[in-house]
Length: 129
Image (cartoon, rainbow, N blue to C red; front, top):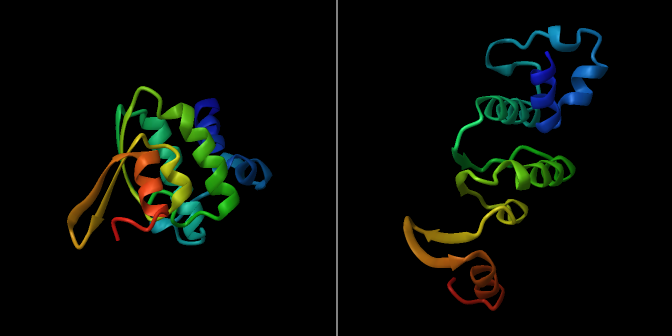
């Protein structure tokens, strides 16, 4: 139970589970019915934390999270991703803080590739669009 609660805390669901009268015995129906899309995405984060992979592929990993939970998760991911390889597809800027290299695709083709800060400066200057 302790490891599961750690995973839920990591994913931002710890308080929800602690405050629910069923706690860890809370049943989640098939497909996550009864949960918000953000809660479903957070359960995915908890499962990922429990699996502890060395390579992580993330597709729009914070798309269903509100800004507060997104900031919290990005902060937690900074240390969790150390020593791991992560490939992240996103349209959201906060998650880019986790990257050291950024590629921009347009119509399926790579149009920009480089260190994150250099690519972001390139975009801010209006180049590469």
